[in-house]
Image (cartoon, rainbow, N blue to C red; front, side, top):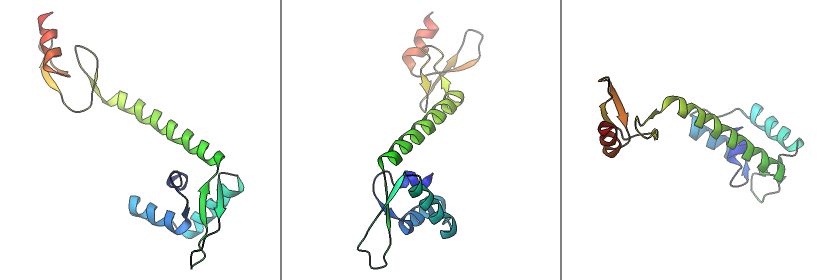
Length: 129
């Protein structure tokens, strides 16, 4: 999947893809896994091979329209998964219900328990009710 995402913005050689994966993860994928995967993507119509004037004769891979659609679908699915997980982890303002990502104002609810608010306005509005 990383290969597809790396090809989203520009065409790249297998070497370039391998280097970028190593930079991101600290581990370089083996040629014995990377190139068969790229060839499978090519055979399924997700990428196309481009001729290059590279001295080493490296082939560059570029997403096809079908590949671009697949990348968009993958990114959307990943975004939905992340959103769902964040919804489970994030607190809500006790007054207005907004999700609290970073800044929080603390106060007490009517039972004396500490609760979070998004701002002093919500804390004060909650207290006044």
